[in-house]
Length: 162
Image (cartoon, rainbow, N blue to C red; front, top):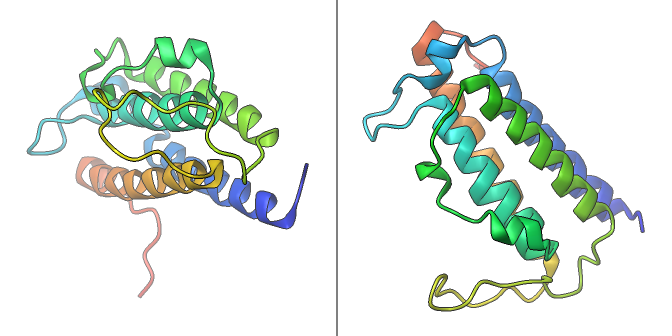
């Protein structure tokens, strides 16, 4: 069911993901996989985080109740980077899968799954909409991190208003 609210949420999520992908567009393997932050993350590791801890966890597992996604849950920061290009493609694939979940999700219904309290000691969301908000916040936050990383790599700035 398409509503103005759903269209707006999907448009904002799509814009955030496009921002993420624009921030990494054109980067070679060395720039995708080299450390860019004092904490030790690379662009590819941040993309792993977005894939595993945002798209797979929040989008597919929590909101969608997807059993395959639940079987893939792990700390995205700890997922080994096989290649930067593979990491980008995995992010695209899981973003698309989340979009398919969101297209049929009743935003007023509870999430279809919540992790056990011993693994995730936080109270469950009351609605799937809260999971979508989490997707939006995480994506937007990390798009900004990728902007800073990209500027440090080659000076490219996403959007400068001033």
